[in-house]
Each structure stands twice: as structure tokens, then as C-alpha cells.
Length: 294
Length: 266
Image (cartoon, rainbow over all chains, first blue to last red; front, side, top):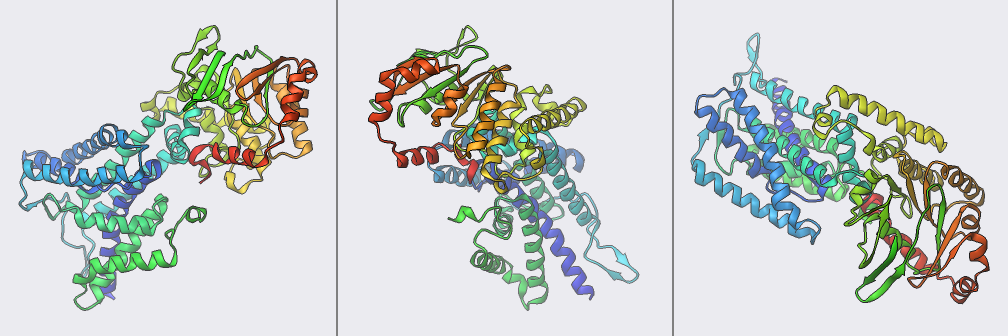
């Protein structure tokens, strides 16, 4: 029983980070139909900014805020300067550009910060809470992770559901030309979409780094899991991304917790899950429309 | 608009067409398929840039007219088909149309500052009022995909009207409507003309003849007649253009499908 609780808890915590990363991908896909492969590198870049601040003696919280702000700016700049010129061309062009950016940013991090492993501090303790004599896998830091992801989700939902800018962003996502005719500044909305996505992506990068090691490519595995989570959810649905992330986190945790030598099978399991879902429901678990397949 | 000419790769889609919509009038734009009605419409919206000619609005020449500026200029248009945002509720669709009336700046809206909050409420009220006017408020919370086509068309019209435009461009508002719905639409357009000018592209001749103050007839990109409905009906050139051309149903369908508001129908 205790093992089940522990495995489930760590699955949920991992899953919430996957969910945040998947959400960042979905935000960009919805508004620009571009799969942003550079998401992971961008998040790694902002984590290294945070790390530099922490090394210079600043508090974790200041570093967190600065890193998220840097993510916002980075997302906006990438959209305006790099993605905008290739938009409207063949769809693959923009995707290849983000792939190139993925490699370029990673290389840039290595040049500036070095490519050795560095430890990244966690804001809260990493020892599990104890109840009587049993210690569970829930640590103060993982509570922080869950709360941070939850707050981000709630803020995003509020932005999209209840504000005029959110409405304009959704309108732009569903029909750029029509939105433009109605006076929506579509370009601005796309930039904002990328900026917000980069903030969420950065957050997932910072959360997964906390209490662990960072190096220029440390986000690579999260990219894979984030993609699987996003596609599980249908790539079009923010709710789908969140549920997909949590499900994937749980599934992977059960695999590594219960299957003999399972921890080596985690990556494989992620791909098996992806294949099964795509075979059974090609549009993902939360496909918003079945017509898209036709 | 005076002397508008547009050529697509050497094919003249419009040559030297002039049209003036007077304040408070309903101006009809008719012609056989391929006459250039939709092209002229797109010029008026800035979607197509004319090769020659001037567009004047309220005594000011509009150079480099762009679609995004339309609503600021007080011009709204509906699209062939409906072009509603599939993932937004009916009310939200209409709220997007009221966008230009929001006062709060971009960043205060983003940060949900109190002024922006008040704005959002006003927007919601305006949108609801527009839906009430078009008798579609019962559908406010529904998604467009789940509604019958005529209702979708009413919502699309509400979305154009909520901006309170001075000029309303209606692109085939009656397509897909039944006889009695078309009758209602005619009355609505007449009623609107007390508040705004209307430029109407339409295939249904009886509707056009009933509601328009003036009519311009295009054929093969050229203006062949202009005047009151009675004058146009009596014009032999118009009869010839219509009777000389068999109605091409397939081209009509292709035109409809091709210009249906980008991704909105995904």
C-alpha cells in the first residue's frame, strides 16, 4: 500500500510537470499550427539564467521571477523575429526552423554556461513528509511543484475564459482572417501566445530542474514526454494536455515502480503508450473534432 | 470607390468599376457568377489591393487599406458562408465583433485591471443586446457547430452589427435561407439602413430588388448598369447579361467553398 501511494504521488508530480510542458506546446500549436521543438531549449536557457542569478547570491524567488520574465521575452522575440518570417510558407518550414533553434539555443547555452552538470537548488526541502514512522514520497518541494503548476493553469484558464485579450487570442486561433476583419490585432495575439507558452515552458523547466542537475540538454527527455502528453490529449486541447500529462506521469511511474527493472523501460513505455493511443484514437484522447481527420 | 481595376495574373477581374454607397442607403451589387462582385467586396475590405483606382471613405482617401483597420473605420462585413469561430460560444463570437469598442489598453486588459474588467462587462452586454436584436439570445451559450445554418447566419450578422458600423458589407446574406427567413432578412436590412449604409452582394434578385435603394450591375468585371431597381430592371444590357449566361451551379458552389473564412470551419 505504501509503495502504491508513493508511486502514485511521484507519478502525479512528474505528470504535472509534463502537463505544463505539454500545455506550452498546445498553446503554440493552437494559435499558429506550429510544433515548437525549441520549447525545451528555450526553457533550458531561462533555467540557466535563473541558475546564474542564484550563483550570484540572489534568492531563488527572484531568480524564478526573472527566469519566467525572460521566458516571456524570449517567446515573443522568437515569434516576431524567427518564426513570423517563415509563417505562411509551407508548414514544414516553420517546424524545421524550430528544430534548428532547438539545436542553436542548446549550443549557445553550452558556450556561455559550459556543458558540465551543475546542481540546481530546490526552494523547499527534498525529504518526504513523515507520518508516524513511514515517510512518503511527497516532499515540501513537490508540494511546491504541484501548487505552482496548479496556479499557472488557473491563471491561464482565467485569461482565456474571462478576459478580452484571451477572447481575442482564441478568436485568432480559430480563424485568423476572420478575426483580422473584426479588428483583432492577430499578429499581437500570436506573439502573446508564444510568450505565454514560453513562460509555461520555462516554469516546467525550472520545476524539473529543482533539486536536480542541469546541463544544456537536460530538457531533452522532458521534450519527449511533453510531446507524448500533448499528443495523448489531442494537441489541440489545453485540458487534454493537462490530463495527458498526468496520465503519462502516472503510467510511467507505475512502470518504473512495479515492473522489474522498470526504470530502464520508462522511455520505451512512453512510446508504447503513445502508439496504443494513436492506434485506438488517432485524434488523441480529447480530439476536439473528428472532422479534422477527413 | 472610383475607377477600381484588379487583374489576377493578366486576367482582368475588375476594370474601371466605380461605386458609391450613400449614407443611409442600401446599395445592391449584382451580376452573374464571375462578374467580380466578391473581388470588389474584397477590395473594399483591403483583402485585395486594386491595381488602379481610389477608395474614399468619409471624404478621405484610404491608401493601403488593411483588413485589420476596417473595424476602426466603422466598417463591418459578413462573409459568404458564416465564418464563425467554431471553438467559441455564440456570445463569445459576437463579443469578438465588439472588440473595437473596448477602451482599456492591451496591457491593462491582459492584467485584468479594473477598467478592463468593466470593459469586459460592457462588451458582454453589447453582445447580448446584439443577439437579442437578431432574436438569437437563446443560443448564447451554444457552439456554432451545433446550430442550424440560418441561426448561424443570424449570429454572424449579429457579430457584424455589434461593432455598430457606419457601413455594413453583406456578402450573400440570404444564401441557404428559406423563403420566409429571406423575407425577415429583407425587413431587417431595411430597418438597418436607418442606422448605417449597407452594401449588399446577393444572388436572390427579388430580395435585392425589394431592399435596395440603388443597384450596380457587374458583368465580366465591367460595370454594365447602375441606378434604382426599376431602372436596372428595365436596362436591356442587364437582361442580356443574365439571360445570355446560363446559371453555373458548380462554379457557384466552388466559389462558396473557396472563400469560406479561412480556418474557421475546421
